[in-house]
Length: 194
Figure 1 (cartoon, rainbow, N blue to C red):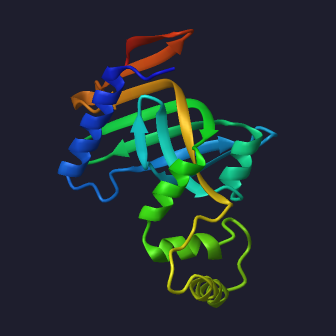
Figure 2: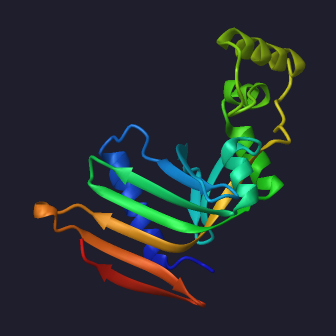
């Protein structure tokens, strides 16, 4: 279901304010996932795009988060900007991006990051940093003189929201909160107590 224009406008306003305030990583967000037994994991990832369909991030699909999303395709996101005292919470189902989307984004990454995607077995035990650097060098030699293609185990995910909540910090902890909740085919907007 398409996100309401107001949600997209509020999110863009939050992002613009964070950039203007010189937040170090204005697109950093917490991603929470769960495994088949209901155990929750959370980590920081980077929001790489959002539109009326949802929120996109990229990762190694064989990582803990990738394996959890394969088991339980739902996630929660939090974007928080301390400087501007704003926060956005998102909950929803998750689907993979298309191969074309993943290929296009991967092609924009720094070559070192592209090589790292081939070298890293994300979330697996690593014997030493030297071993990782050796694997990066092997990847460089494999693709020397040409572009680095996207590894088959590296792609993106789109969180399809059924809830988006905006939090705006105010004095005396009397914050403003607005929740957009999907109900059937409609989005309901509510103001919440702080």
